Length: 84
Image 1 (tube, rainbow, N blue to C red):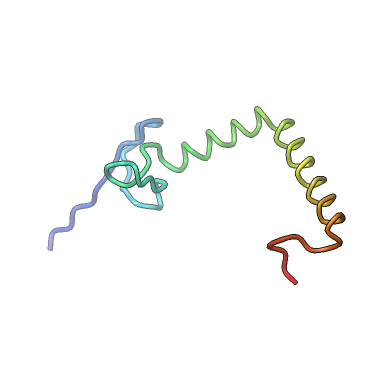
Image 2: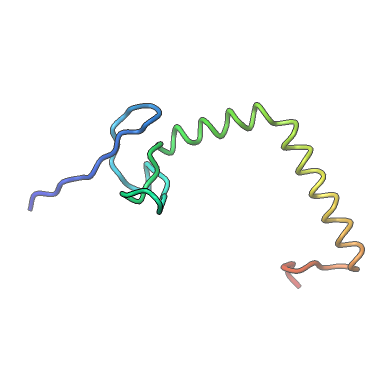
């Protein structure tokens, strides 16, 4: 049999790659069911965004952790979803 592989061109790096979950994230709203930007480009973008906003992200994480600890202490132990 003659198998044909479906490919997609990444809209960011313009490389043509096999259209699979190894190369593209799933996107159900897309006609083909996958994102138009490849995983590598997506990861690079996320890493750049993290570096740009690192201080803000770390501050938010610390605040969330502190609030969760306070809630846990107020409730006297375990919160919803914690393992018993």
